[in-house]
Amino acid sequence: MINLGISLLVYALLFLALNFGAGLSPLYAALLALLGFAGSFFLLSRRTSKALTALMEGVQRDMQAGRTEKAVKTLQSAYPLGKWQFFVTSQIEAQIGSILYLKRDFAQAFDHLQKAFSRHWVAMAMLAICYMKRNKPEQMKAAFEKAVAATKNESMPWALYAYCLEKVGERSKAIEVLEKGIKKGAADDTLLANLGALQEGKKMKMKGYGDLWYQFHLEKQGVVMKQQTRAVQGRRKIVRR
Image (cartoon, rainbow, N blue to C red; front, top):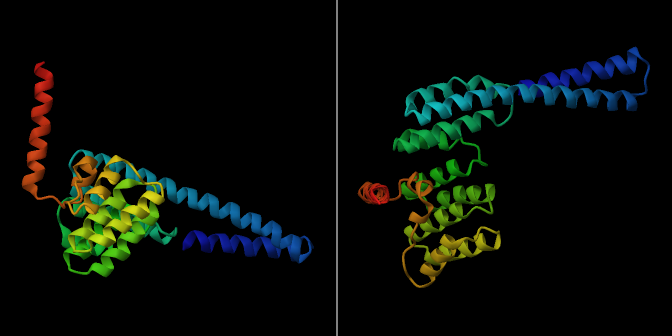
């Protein structure tokens, strides 16, 4: 990328200047030039990261205000940053894909999620679900493996992986996944309860994860509406007291 190219040019110029201009030995010239390379690459990468962070803050404000289309357009305007730094484009693709998935625009989301950053576990989980809905269980598993690898000690990715495995008829594999998640340090009450449920031949219960679960759209909309209505009614009762 451009940042790397500029840094390599700095290295080459410094080496030539120190070796031929200042008369330093090739070894010392290379070591000092390497410091110049590292410093220039750090500063350039930091500049790109700051630009991306500022843009993401604007996207977050748009999302909170319900301006999803504007958020997507803002992210698309950041594509040129991908020419400067590694993984920037894949991070942008992960954000766009996630937003489109939340909007239930699954077809367009899928196109972006396929190019998403593999360390973005939410995007990888959404991609896995898209594969599941396309009856591609092997691709689903591969995407989920990336999701759990990105955040080994988080309960939700493991539970989501197991849920989808059970949904495609691989209950024994789902149990193995939850047991592996527990060994990796992701154990919590919800994960342990779901492991017990699967071992007893029962269905998993995911509502304990709250909005984090509902964003994956694996519950029917009617079920989600009922949950939200109950939550509102519960808050009203508390206020009346």
